[in-house]
Image 1 (cartoon, rainbow, N blue to C red):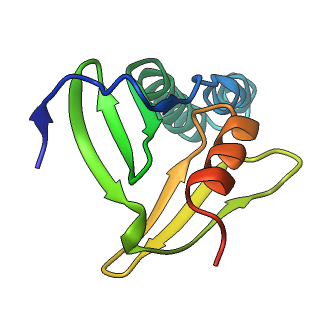
Image 2 (cartoon, one colour):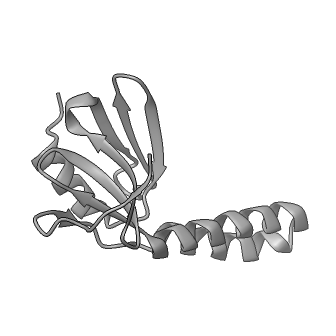
Length: 127
């Protein structure tokens, strides 16, 4: 349940990365000449991801992964519930997957992928 709380000072925040939205927007411009609707669809998705990268923040704490928009906590994922995680495509990381005991999550990588991997290995080592 989303709540308004202050961001704890002892957490590791991830820097945003605009690489994936940028690639999608550039690809959409090229696709506009081949297929208008496909290009527009990818452009809208790229702009949506650009907005998400600009507004969302991930924070790794000692016990969980927190997702914030501004000062508002949107979602908390306790590491104790995680079964495993993976970052897909090491050359161009675009997808972050993690599985909890109750659900599976796929997230586009809108954050520095090296920082993400380092934080995951530090706070939630692979099992």
